[in-house]
Image 1 (cartoon, one colour):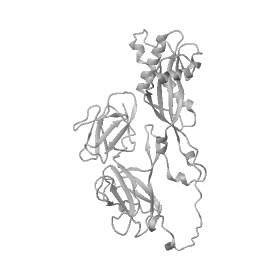
Image 2: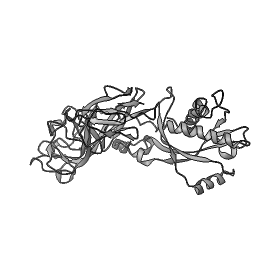
Image 3: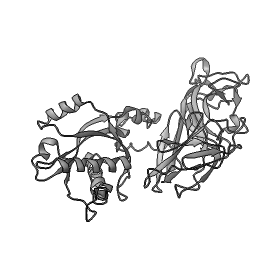
Image 4: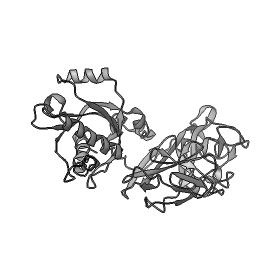
Length: 422
């Protein structure tokens, strides 16, 4: 989204405004007819300004903004360091956490103040994920959570606004990504190259005549719940069976020196020669392009089980580590073919690769499902002993929302692939 924080504020206010007349509280209070007994003025004004408006006020006031450095770091790409068009941070999204003060004000009725807060609390609790309007470009989504603040902290906040204390709550909206500056256009490809030395005289990139290995990078995308592709970039990379990862370095693929690629489990064990995974047509001396096999088993004929691994390049003596190793994590593959959104009570069966009974976790949004060995009931999942599929039945609540299906095996979470409408 562009740099317009008011668009987020308007979406949160609009969420309450659109559901005000259908809020369950009106039927529960036994009013006749069953509609609202009053309608406040929905606003984003600060406490001192809201008090100047006539009638009952319900305000979602943005009072503080913080950067989310951990989320920004997920988007870091090494090639940004090589640009000469400006500081690299210009080309990264600005990740922000927004903090809102929710309060109600009425000059004559404490009942209307507290009923307005009751309606807003239930609506925000039932909608922890807030998305932009369908016509927004680009679309965005964020999570909304109630934050704990001490009475003393809230008192100081109200004193700063020079307004008497009212019942209030703090909500955190995260993560809001502000669009970065566009990346500069790449330099045109050279049409002529002059080489002053024989190839054999060119120095290798690493110490002692060995290649240099920088890290692992993966550029990919997944289909979001709206059906639109969502691109992402990872470094260090997480990859699954059938997917591709880049091993970045210099002077790679030099025969007899760095023409072999090895994979070693971080937990220990034997290193496996996975040179057969290299896509020769796409690999260069600056990168090895590795595609994991579709099945899961023993490398190199199959992708290894999900976990944390180390990659390095070498040559000469088989299996001898000749460069610094770099990390890569391997996840289970979740087949997105049935999606992107699964609708209905379930159970659903999801094919894939690398699901391990006893080491697999399944979550719907932030709700963890319980493991079972039989047909899963509501809020349960089971894993086929072959490791090629899992079945689950989503929990019944909270109904009316769409949440991501999250799969972790050995603590490694798979790419987003499917969403579930509850």
